[in-house]
Length: 369
Image 1 (spheres, rainbow, N blue to C red):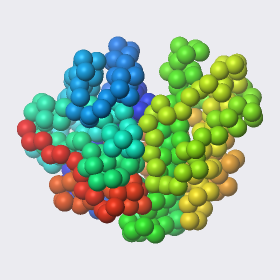
Image 2: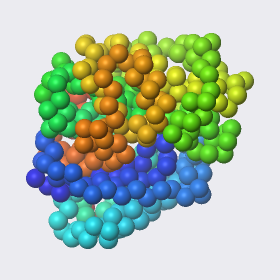
Image 3: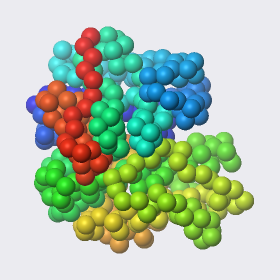
Image 4: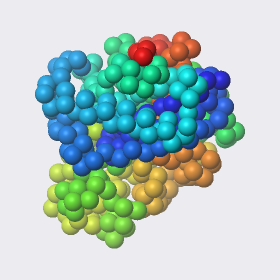
């Protein structure tokens, strides 16, 4: 077993998650400590500007001024988070085999063979004096895959560790929602299917920021006090993405809030929350068998209104990750620690059933201090 640290800055752009696990890249031995380092408002504003610049990119190595500055800030934020983590836990850096560094996605369009994550892995390795694996998605996209989601192989290891009855569904609700369907203990086409379901928190967060100045619907209170507009929900669901067969993946800004533009703050939040729940139900309708249990992680798992709407539509047992001993907030950071070890062990990160890549695909780039 290796001690590995994973770092994740997701599409919600709230901050940097840090988590340690012990793993050999196949099984999870133990969960280690965690840390959250929030982005400042200035940092978050710069990331939003970088996100807005993303669609104009033609090459993943392009760094126009706003992206170059955002990349510097992302790298420094991760270096700061890692330094705090090592100090907080008293880790001897020599005991850490590897750091998995996802970086910040600013654009993702596999139809253009383009996925862009900013963050300087070599600079981070030099700063923390530990080997760093980064740039996890590029190899998959170059091979013809979607480049996302990459976490399913970790979900499968967690489900096996927990002894859950097959099939199992794992739903991550970050900025974008993604579903992993695990049919058994393997990673073949009949065992592992994954794809992005649609928006999770992104549209809700953006609506709240625009209408209230707050970055999220805390505890789903706005949505709980509003009414779902059925006509607006129908327009939101009338998108060809939902009819496309998996594997498939999305950019954070793939959907518009235009259908709810005329609604009250509360009704807009309720309708966008129902939209996320409806996309999850749509996803569950296309997997080979409805999962016995749907485990929900990510920021959306802390929104009781969203969980209630998903439970109503899912027609299966829905549990928050914390209910079975998994982390709700740090699961993806743990996953990139797991994927970094798989890189060191020469194991694939993605599969035909998870990203649509033609064959099991290795990924990541190793930077040495």
